[in-house]
Image (cartoon, rainbow, N blue to C red):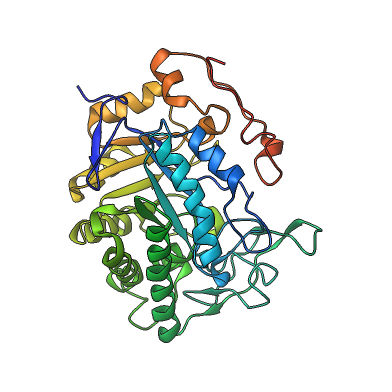
Length: 363
């Protein structure tokens, strides 16, 4: 019987278990330059017992950046920084994908070199806050009104995704994941209430899927489609992205990804206290639409994860916050050991405290 601790194949590699460390922003890149560093290499290598590590979101361009201190993956210096991370993870026996990130409208000119954020449409993500440095005076400000991208700019951003995929390959990543969830740029094309375009990238569902398809095709030229994953969040309303018919939209998105032969889809379930529940029927519809691996994340326990695998609609399970305070999470889950709790005050920014100083259960 399939269990969390059984191997699974992805992109020509045999993953040692079905436990995923999903993307989690920790805001500890070296400044200036948004460069991954030795501290980050230690952090990820400590967690290399996961079957798959997916990096924190890493922006594909200056205009793709939404929050201070997040890493990028488009300059030679950033490639060199990430190379330290992938080398450390590989030496520890891990497999690691890079999550490529463009935030679109979820930003502020303080994070984008003074440029106005861009989006599918000139629709502001009202009430959404982003974190800025502001000359060493960090704090939160409201996301700015974006301007709608021209078709030429859309093609430029697709080329930036391709370039960042090439950078990820040079940095030693085993594959890449596209962040198409949580209200960021690709999601701003997908969701009906964030896209009011009247050209080939808006209007009909097929048109709203076009940007996703073209980005996937571009990065697949670099890695091969089987080493490409896509993260989707069908029911989330994070950062103001809402779709009027999420099941039909996201089953169609998964069907499109299946036609493109991507290696996996990664479903981020809404996980706040009164969040809408994703029905089992919806999950089975995604399973039926997709031939690759399906990853689910969202407040999973060991018991819920095992049940999801047994039911057949999930192949792997992401454990986010538990990985923060439990670098040896797979071993703890397998042995039934208690899980440590993370300190929420040290999640974003800072140094080793609350980042690399959580002990293994055996030390």
